[in-house]
Image (cartoon, rainbow, N blue to C red):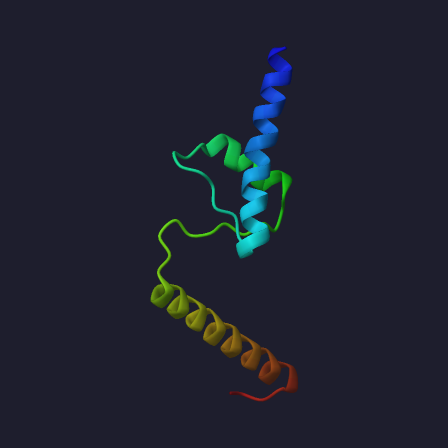
Length: 87
């Protein structure tokens, strides 16, 4: 009986984030945090995105812009080195 109760709790814990992911494209874990359950979920669902707890659109935009800029610079350097030019 204890295993059945644990299983139903585990299933409910795993289904709730999936419902949020279907709506927003990211997972928002319930509060208060349960690090062990969250880690188990993330390990069983590789590639799952976690929603930020305090969304900061300006900060996210800045971080994405820096990441894209760094990626473009690295790509350009790679193309230059492959062609034998110095950029």
